Length: 370
Image (cartoon, rainbow, N blue to C red; front, side, top):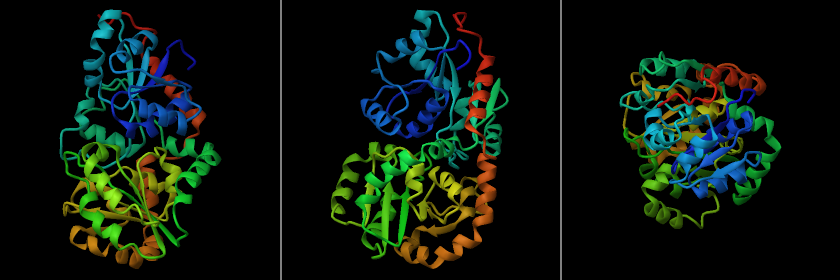
């Protein structure tokens, strides 16, 4: 950073799904990433080698962060940050300023109290117009002192390091699969408050009827693993001998994985929006029989083919039937929604400069909080 402010990224707790969002920002800005979980630190060093990873345990992290840094980039609400870091800030008589960073562009949160928790943020990074409108709807945009349109910075960081990431994907994913005409990526979300996840209902049909010319890669959400660890272990063990099926639990960077996939299959995961960058076919499992025409939470469904819960046993025949048709006919709407979600391409050096300007609203090292 060009100012005197010392900045860092922060992943506090078991939020491994934040890694592929905060780590590329750290690489862009040239700041360290502080984590409180050793496993996330190990993944960060392996998959994002240009970043300084700092592991601090739960007890040490608050005082370490407050004493060493002035601005923290995170994906938690400010209320939670203050709850965790209050005593350290009070002890050191210093307010640490924060920049909120989204961890995906999913359509969740329309019908529940979720994004409202961002009402105390001062500076936010937002992908594009869609996210701004959502924050406005939730009444958590107008209080911001500043915001930055990031576009799809994670895709840009991937392209900048494409050779490195594609080599990782080849070694850790592609080589573990048999040759196939088509690779389907299934990226179910976790069982959140909206009960969005489709994994347990779709899994039998997906695992037991894979066509001979298809590979299936299942990208499991870290929160789903936390919720149903033993149950998922049993499922993985049950299908471990199938060379066409790969469960992916420890590969955080999403774009090298997406480039291996011919088809996206999901429910409410933000990975569906990420996949729009490649303009390839998308299929959506409608786990709760919601109405895509009326439900704003199913906005992305317009970009592909909906599969109803009662049709899960026919998933592969539906994908095969619509594959070529879907590729042609949905391309214009995919591109339109991608622009709505992420805006136009922004050079990384321009984004870095805009972020530096945005945090200029914060005073230089602030000792006037208490």
